[in-house]
Image (cartoon, rainbow, N blue to C red; front, side, top):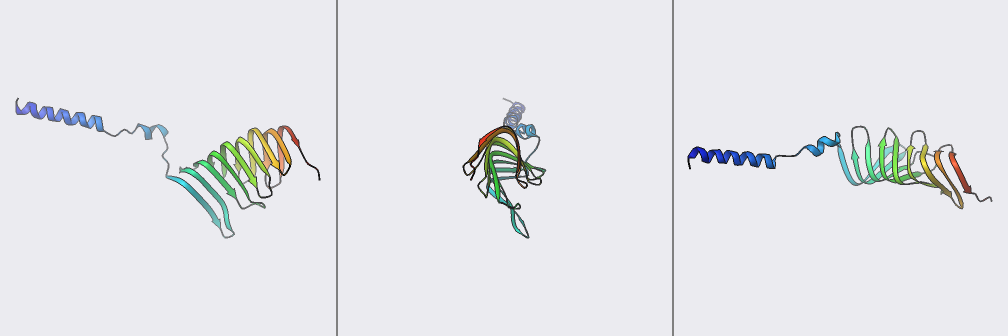
Length: 169
């Protein structure tokens, strides 16, 4: 075997190794956006001169340029008259609006609760909305319906296909 053939085989072998072991960038190119920060089992506090205004926690969170994506999300708001929190399986937080998906549960300090499969919460305008079915409970009172629009600041509710039971005192 000649020395030229030996080096040619070595070069071919090295090029084959380079082709086989070269990095694969397709997974980062598919999504288009790469998170700036990734968190696991986290709690974020928004603090002002009055104290803690908002608490955002979750099992996994990703911060992109203009929004957050959170799994097992819980958002608590301490800026209103009554302390309130809302949680869901998945959430996207963008421009003070939280889009919620899966097992949405809203709780207020006076015992009012609502549950749905999806919804959104606008913390600036104090609006909770859902397009699908929902259930609101407080003490022994229960209201069911679809397409909820609930203003948490004014305590007003608008909904479709409403039915419920209410205990008078």
